[in-house]
Length: 416
Image 1 (cartoon, rainbow, N blue to C red):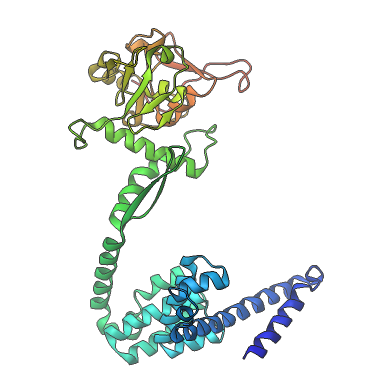
Image 2 (image 1 turned 60 degrees about the horizontal axis):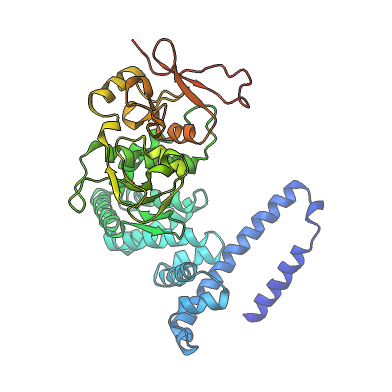
């Protein structure tokens, strides 16, 4: 066997040095098909070897804690990749000989073989050996046309083809099993990084995934032709908007006896001079620009310290745009007032046109509704906002964007 693999290795080596550039297109395509077919057959050989080594206990005799750990070191794989290799080898070894043969013949990829083996095992448990043998043939034929994901979806209705009298009951059982597996596997991990950022990883069950998509998808569309954010950045900002909305509702449960809120600590003199960084109650630091932007938001209460570090004022509600004033602001702006934005009022912060730390008052004439994205944009760009003669906000673009700096307005929200 080793001699055959050595010869195959020599043949592959000769292919890597061939003048590929000189081949006509049809030969290139044929060569790709042949390479893929060979790769699948070699995968079958590899899985057979892994299964035999695992069965012999080779890894433990050589000092490794498991075959997956040994493969990681031997083949320089990640632990997850090595574990999948061992699991797939065991699955195929215990599964239908027809699946093993199809993989050995190069008719399946390893992932397709995994899907078929899982499906056939379910069919055998539900409908018996004869139906399972039929399922192998049907699924193997489908594998010539469908990738593993599509094949798994089709496999959920395989009994319609091999045991139609049992299909409905089996489909219900499979659905219940999938729901139980989703409930068991659901999780969300928040990993704090050294610079204060969080990495989110997790798996959502179908219901929660639907809720998240329903809430976040409307917020991920570009807010105008000048929106240069990537899709990932738009999803990030949409999640931030959802959090702001949740905090603004006041319906979140109390935490430590206080309403859910963000507390920022900063020095008053530094804040008014636009120089002071801030500190969240979690200990994370914020830039001066972020502190000033968050100070606009009625749902975020700053804790301001005097020069000696003593609390000077916690949550100065009189500066916040709340209650009747916010309702009138909503009636005027009807949503984010930035040109081209369609975000509704519930996604918007009340921004002080002349910041309160600069002496600006909390009034309708000094406020404008901005969504989270445009609120950040206004604080970090050269755009400015002012009220026009009709009392509605208009935005002045920076000179590099429009040398004449013609004021722009939001025409999306209908006004009466």
